[in-house]
Length: 82
Image (cartoon, rainbow, N blue to C red; front, side, top):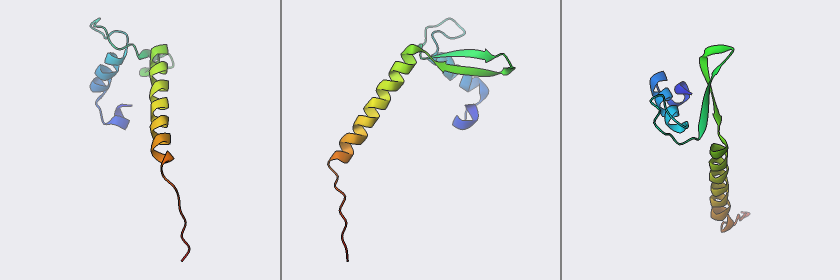
């Protein structure tokens, strides 16, 4: 993830901590993801959406689909033969 977003490992960790239920300092977060150490590779962390994270993701996708459908509903395709 860090490479995809151009973040350092420390920055990626801090940013994902904010999305968890609480960070390493026990400060409340957004509870959108969980972080687990991969048992097969302890240097790897597996991120998963919580039920709240799934709900918000689905709501966002529905909104985006609605915007897309709304914006294209007034557009007509025409074909002109020359």
